[in-house]
Each structure stands twice: as C-alpha cells, then as structure tokens.
Image (tube, rainbow, N blue to C red; front, side, top):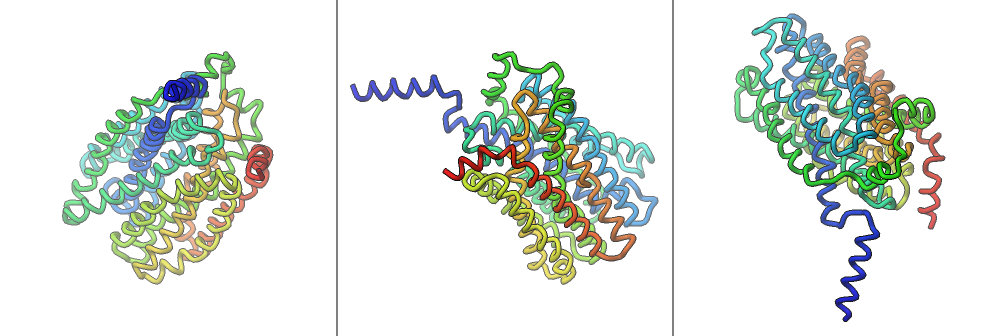
Length: 447
C-alpha cells in the first residue's frame, strides 16, 4: 500500500512538473556545453595559428609583425560576422525553436573548420588563398553568432528558475573545454612533428579533427528535446511575427545593457588568450610551448571554476558575482605585462591561469545576466544580438588588432593595459544600470 502510494505520488509530480528528470538534466548539460566547446575549439585553433603560422602561410609578402596583423584582421572578420548570425539565427530560434537552430549552427561551424584544413596556402594559389580564408572565417562567425544564445537557453529553459546561474553556466564551460582541447591538440601535433613539418602540413591536423568532434556534438544533441518554455510559448500563441523588429522597437534599453556586459570580459580574454601568444613569441622571444602550456593549464582550471561561479550566483546573485569578477580583473591587467616580461615559465602560467579564472567568474554568469534581460518570445534574438553586438562594439572583435597596433605605435604595454581597464569600466557601468532585471533575485537571496 505504501509503495503504491509512493508510485502514484511520483507519477503525479512527473505529470505536473515540466522539467526533465535529473539524468536528463545531465544530458541537457552536455548538449548545452558541447556546441560551444566545439565552436571555441574551432575559433581557438584559428586564433593560435593566426599568431604562430598564418602570417607566413597566407600573407608571406609582409614582415612578421605586419603578417600577424593581417592574420588578426581575418580573426576580426569572424567577430564582425557574428551580429549577422545573431540576427539570422536569433530570428529563427524565436520562430522555429532552440533545438533546430542549434543543429544548423553546429553543422556550419564544423564544415567551415574542416574546409580550412584543406585550404591551399598563398604559395599554391596566390591571392585566392587569403580571400577564401576570409570567407570561411565569415561563415564561422555567423555560426558562432547563432550558437551561443541557443546553447544557454537550452540549459536555462530546461532547468529550474532558482538554479538559473548554474544552468546558464553549462554553455559557458564550453569555451574553456574547447580551449583545453585546442591547446592539447596543437601541443601534441607540435611535439610529434618538426617545425618544418608543422609549417608544411601539421597545422592542418587540428582543423581536420573538428569534423569528428562535430559528429559527436550532433549525436549528443539529438537526444535533447525542445525546451519546455518554447513549447509553452508555441501553445499559447504568443510568438511575435518579427522578433528582431520587436526587440529594437520595445527593448532597446535591455539590448544596450546586455551588450555592455560583453565588453570588459571580451577584452580581458583577448589579452590573455590571443595577444599573449604574439607578445610572448614575437616580442619576448619565448618558446611557443611556454604560453601554450599556460593557456592549457588556465583553460583546464577555468572549466570547473565556471560551474562553481555559476552555482555561487544562485546563492549570492548574478550581478554580485559579475561585479566582483570585474573588480578582480583590474589587478590582473596591471600585473600581466610585468610578469610576462620576467620570462619565467611558472610566473607566466600563474598570471594567465589567474586571469582565466577571474574571466570565468564573469563568463559563468554572463548567460544568466543576458537572458534575464529579455522575455521568452524574443529571448533568442535579444540574447544573440546583444552578445554579438556587445563584443563587436566593445572591441572584442578587434581587441587583438587594437593591442597589436597600440604596441607597434607606442612600443609600450601601458596603453594596452589602459585600454583593457577602460573596457572593464564600461561593463561595470552597464551592470550597475541593470538592477531592474534582478530585483526579484535580490528579494530571493534575502530570504
């Protein structure tokens, strides 16, 4: 009798609670993370190659620093195209559903990266080579512009509202995992081949591996259904005809504040992960293995740190964790170049790792912050567009380029530090102005 009553009670809870069971939530977590992990693996493979070899392979008619500058320009193309992806896939995500769009973005990103692995260099086909590279970067950026919001919403809209910080952090763990994978793959390839072989064909192997990873990502996502919140939106008939137009007409302030949240963390990430490669190898003359090791350790530790900060946000508040990370980023920026200039491997690993953990404190809650700014009917569009436009407007798209120009012009790292601190200040201002979206969170934390 007791067992029968317990079974009936469990069936009643399942019928009334739209959230998936715990084992399904683990599946949702992996599905949320795998896409961003793959796409950041792809992006980080390119970023690393841009700093190390692409200047010579695709822009050989220039000096090493100018060649790197041009390679970073193609890196910027991948960012410039993100808002287009945010508009296109954001609209589709609010009209067709989160799951459908996430499949499209994953396929597009994997295909572009696989084609880069097959791309002939400048020596083989001349000017056509960098032009095709730019086009592939363009489509990579479009895919990433539509992927992020869907991955975050997969966790947020499947999960419990009171655990929004943790569930939003799942997708944010992807970049750390992707960075670890890319750094490990490049390190293994570099260790297994000579410098000449790496320049000749070894650099292609990490790009080719992306196709396999894309297949794994599609398999994992196949078992995850549409989010309950979107299904509820469909059944209620509350979907708007043009989510993007509705967003700009009625939610311009939300769009601005959510975009501002991207600026500081993006510039810090560009300093730690992208510009550091050029500075360490071309300015300080250090072995690329030193900075790659630092990135590998930092990215590996940032993955559990991201989950930890996401869980902490559910206890103390999203904005509290975010603002603390912004304040902590200032000493990291101030210490970065003096420590790098020592040339000591342990010190470099320490500053890069510390910086990536500070970045994780902000990035962990970024998804929860941005998605909270928009209602369900335009949440995919609002989140995608603010995420991508914020990065573009704030300089994340051009941060490595700006840092390279600043150093080339002034021969000083001081201006780069000022630029990064100013970007942090803009984000801090945006968070301070966004209190209206977190009034309920403050009330819940007080109780």
